[in-house]
Image 1 (cartoon, rainbow, N blue to C red):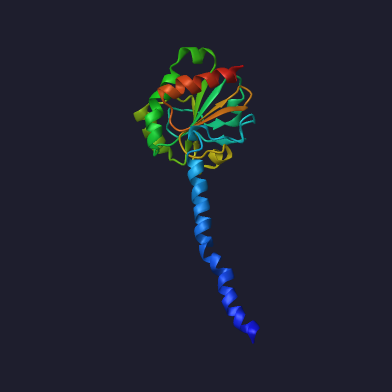
Image 2: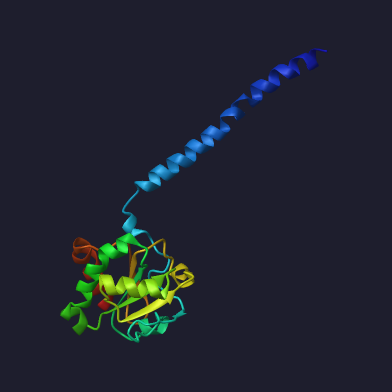
Length: 198
């Protein structure tokens, strides 16, 4: 009799903390996201591919783009540094960085050093890419059309734009996430190109 009278009273006490469990879990996850959000420069997200060969891929050209060839991993293993820019016509920051990519393409010193700029058109159509490059300028020696985004996934792309610097043997040396700017070119991209040349 005494056992049964005590059981109903002790059960609610032992389970009362369970009411707060969902709140505690939510608070922990929210705190983790908050800390990660302000944990550093998002443009310097780590890449598991740094120091490794570019993934194997073959992408078709953008049809109607002045007989421009497509793009493959072999194109980045021909000696000289490659700048690979992942872009899309629907990406607003890609329009913003277009002028800075053109500046790189028109840099005589980089051209003399054999630096090439290739484009990887991410989840886009040939028609939209042609329009984008006609309006914003076309800095690319080659453009590969990645309509399904599979090659970008193999590169570990988080979103567009992203820029990779690849050594002459096809080794990925550096990855930049976000749109290029004058400061980014001067302080980050050009120094990383020089490092990749060594």
